[in-house]
Every structure is written in structure tokens, then in C-alpha cells.
Length: 117
Image (cartoon, rainbow, N blue to C red):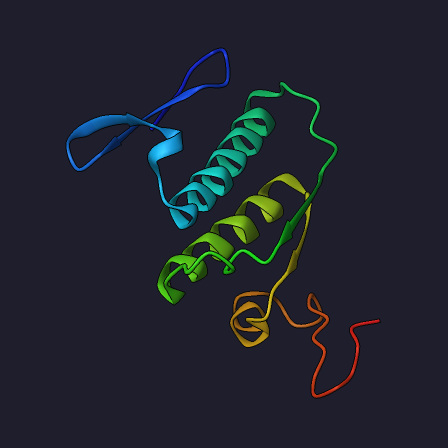
């Protein structure tokens, strides 16, 4: 994909160029998260931008994302959060996967019929 200055993007998929609108919901989600991670990371390294340092992600696996792709996205978000001192809050039903990726004490997981808070 290539992000244009007007916030539109060209997507190169399977050797063909297309637009964002023709992607599946899972592909759209992966591109949104990858773009956010890349922009935040680049802005931090270059000292530009005004990101508030807090990112909320609700149900990243809601769009039929393979477990390996979800794990890659979550690991990338954790790395960017550590590099940029950003807080990332992820709400997911994949608590065990998130717990395995994050340092101890960085997760709140509801078990059984309990609530997170």
C-alpha cells in the first residue's frame, strides 16, 4: 500500500493496483493498524506529529483474522508502545494470546463470569 498526502491510499494486491474499498474487512483492519503503527513510530522517531500517546483498539480479531496475523499485529503494537512510551489498550477475547505477548502485570483479564473492572 502507499499512503498519499490527501490520506487516500493505493493498495497493491496480487500484482494489481486497487483501492481500499475493495479489500475484505480483515484486510482493512490490518491496513488500519499497520498504518497507525507506522505513522506513530515514524512521528516519534522524526520528532513530528502530535499523537497524544494513547491508542485504543477494540476487538482486533473481530474480522476473521488468522491467529498468526493477530499475534504479529499485537507484537508490533507492543514494540511501538515500548519504543514510544505510548499506552495501548486492547480489548479482545484472545486474552491468553495477549498475556503471552506482554510483560507480567500489563494485562487485565476477566475469567469465567467475572468482569475486568
